[in-house]
Image (cartoon, rainbow over all chains, first blue to last red; front, side):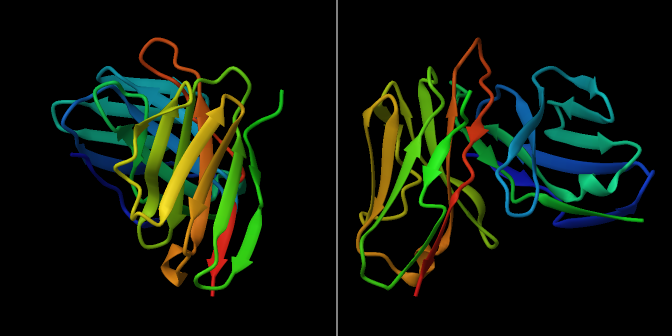
Length: 111
Length: 115
């Protein structure tokens, strides 16, 4: 089965850098995903890692270590609009079509 | 292009009543997913379909829950009878699988309150 752990809450200030960690256990592996969810809204896709290493996309980067079952999402130059919940997800099965989500990390950015 | 459309956006009902939630996936997407989100349990996968066929319903909590997808553009999630612990936000999502990865596109969700 799958098990995903993330910190429940984090706080940071505008302009800062924050790292949100995710550890996971999965019977099969076909990628690790990060989704962003603003309060009262639907989750939206942020990033996808299938190989070890860092994937950079603008202010957001995601890192994966498959041997350690570990990933992190790095947010740089934080803005108030980055206040949201960040969900780590892994495939539910070998086919990788459905995702199992962690409970999410609620990030609060203050001025 | 229209995104995933869910209805109703909000539903308040009394315990024991039947609840039907509806979803229209993005045109051309061949996967459809139903998720439930609560503070305590997070975002849980209930069931998903591929080409209108249910693939995995192991996340459906009880026999009170049922889901159908009669055609490629419509799906329903039904709860009968409803109970207060069913109160949650129910999300529908769709995807189009390319290679080994398909981004999930979520609807706005249906917030269900069972009194």
